[in-house]
Image (cartoon, rainbow, N blue to C red; front, side):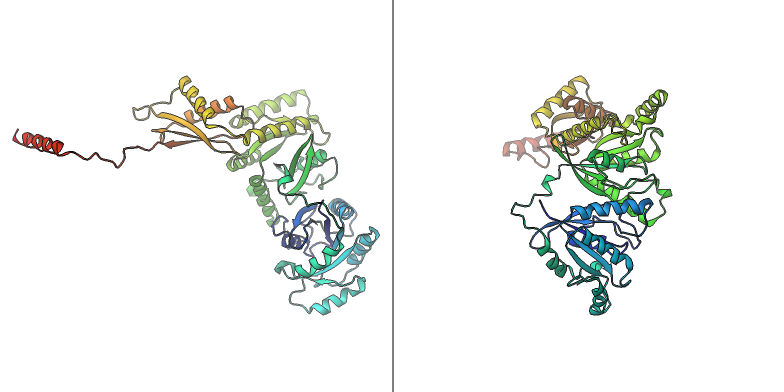
Length: 464
């Protein structure tokens, strides 16, 4: 396995900025505010001679309660699994007591430490490093993470500390498995679901709405299958999003939907389907992703409330009737097996390869059962169908007079194909293409005899 390096330090010293610079990504949310990162965020650094896993962590503070304490737990888990640690400090703030306390904790954990002095741009680098010499760490590295300076020197310090491993590095991209984005309004239980599926406290969970700010990618292996779970920030109505940081969190959530193969939209069963839930489902449909509806907190409802919830889901989600809702309790773990099966079925349907002969035969059966309505007095002729891609499945139908086929007939064909191929949990796109006229732009060349006959007919017409 790839060795692990954890970035630790106080809030707002530039850990997420360094993470993005070393992983050549924008995966970590960055803002000029303390406490943006709360969960562990993983990426692979491939800049040096040897790749390694880099872990971005939240800032450590003196607080021992609330979200700060939950964040500190995530940092300590990252330290435990790391082969080496990067201690980041802020050259502009100077050496603070909290920096000393974090270094002592790293030394007690027995981890090799590299000291990275960030924000040295515009300062006397030697003077900035001299102040941190009191920490007793050999060869501190000056950095300007926001400008990408100092990364090579930093890697030169880190790579010798990593354990040797003769096994080939795994292909992280291909081993990720099915990408599942878990989305929903704030405080519906997304992070609780991720922790329950993993069997550990992988992401921060609290009763405070908006605890998760970034999109957290977590690998999962269950029943012999591989997944990448993407825990996302809760999305509220646009009119209620005033904080700039929350706006960036919403953008990351929408990007996560686009990057996923299956989107699990979590609802609060007690509240039913809200306008924001419908808007999120619309985002999933626009992205063309497979969809699973998960009604959470099912265990807290009595019989009457459950019947009312089922009726509300059936009425309001009629436009995505192909996505069957799953009723779960993320807190107690009930319904999770059914949820994972629904995810597997949705992914299999979305990525299924559809052969042209099967599609064309199905089209013929659909036409035999119900012909398309007339277009300007003429019947459209649908000749054959073939696959136009997958995730979502696209079916391209060729014919004539297809430009004005009614939407109702398009939906009829979509449902016919869906039923025939058992496509559950995924949108199906039907595309019509007008067949080209093979004689367009072509004229027969008249023989000399045909030309003489044509001239005689013209003269005869003029005399009469």
